[in-house]
Length: 168
Image (cartoon, rainbow, N blue to C red; front, side, top):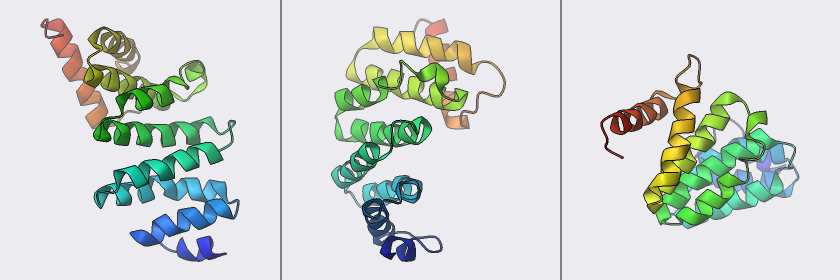
């Protein structure tokens, strides 16, 4: 009941973090997942990246295995934060869990997982692995209707340009 009251309207700030906690504890996982990413972004904006990671990690453990898309969205948020705090290996591990069943994911989600994995491998210095993942993405994302954001498509196109000019 507290979680629902806190999540009424468009919660923000500390209120959204509190709402996620109460919703999860009350077993309203679906509602908690809906507010988890905004809550993590709020924590990150207040320089609480570790708290944001803890929140997302707790949510990832709370979401049933069958809700793969919700789990992917949480893992993508976590990967971005893990990259910021320098925990690239953990971000890679979280996302690699989705590779065996990636063909069952909607195309945009599958491409986002590959894009983040390639980016994390590149930041870690494993350029050969990053190149392989980017090449896989390029084939899939080049078709119309990939579902990726303009920023994500620009990243892939810039990598494609670097590959074509020998920059990788």
